[in-house]
Image (cartoon, rainbow, N blue to C red; front, side, top):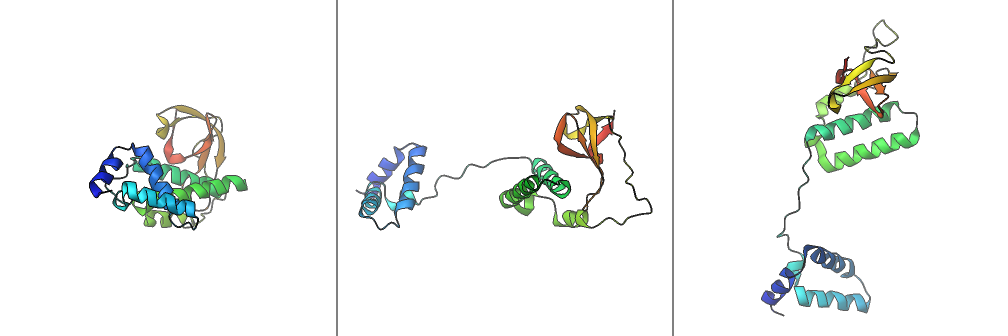
Length: 184
């Protein structure tokens, strides 16, 4: 077939069919079986190598606000530091690695910020952390549409976290830092 005929055959396929053909081609092209060799030859004859390896269609971009990525990363980082459940810690670390691989340094917190947060806080004379909120206190949740919640647990700053952390009854799996809450 001529290049023009191959282009016409390729253009007539829906995008899903093209993706499936490309996937099949790359899976079978290095095979030693006669069937796979014949399949690859037929694909090359009908559609041409230029269509199978072309990058003419740009990848779709996924748009997500930076602050959402940073908040998810920081939450997982905080939970991984304070949890006693090994599975939870591993899940948080896996999500942090996934976010780091997907978004990299341009979207995640600055290295300087991370370094500053990971530095141990010098202990002052006080031994017990000074909590800003008490158990059972109603608070306004900044990053959750201004909803109201009730403090159910308190966690002291640990492992470089600057603020005390709190759990709220309405959202028991999210840790809120003091700077993310306001008293009601």
